[in-house]
Image (cartoon, rainbow, N blue to C red):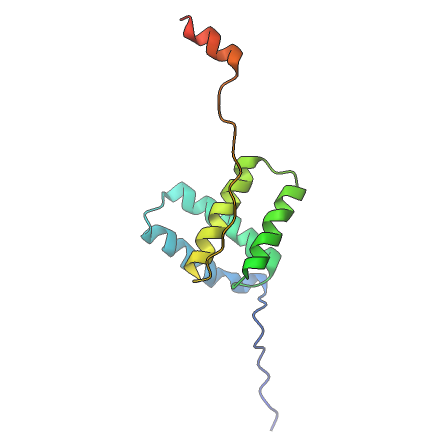
Length: 119
C-alpha cells in the first residue's frame, strides 16, 4: 500500500486563493466597507497573494511587495490603496503589519484657485 502524500507547505496555487478572497470580502463587509471599496481591495489583495504565493503572507512579504509597487512607478493613490488593502488583510489573519501611507498633494493649483475666487 502506497503512503498518502500531503503537501503541508503554505505556498498555494493561484486557484487555491479563492477561499481567502471570499473570507476577506466577508471581513470587509462586516467592517461596513463600501461595496466599490470591497471590490477594489479584493482585486488588489488577489494580486498581492498571487505575488507572494501564499494566503498567509508575512510582514516582510508585505514590506517587500509594497516596495515593488514603487519600482513599478505606480501613482501615490494606487500605492495607498494597495497599502490599505494589505493592512486590512493582515489584520484579518491576525498578523498586523505597519506600512506607511504616502502623503498626497491633493490641493488645486494656485492659478485655478485665483481664477475661481474671482467668480
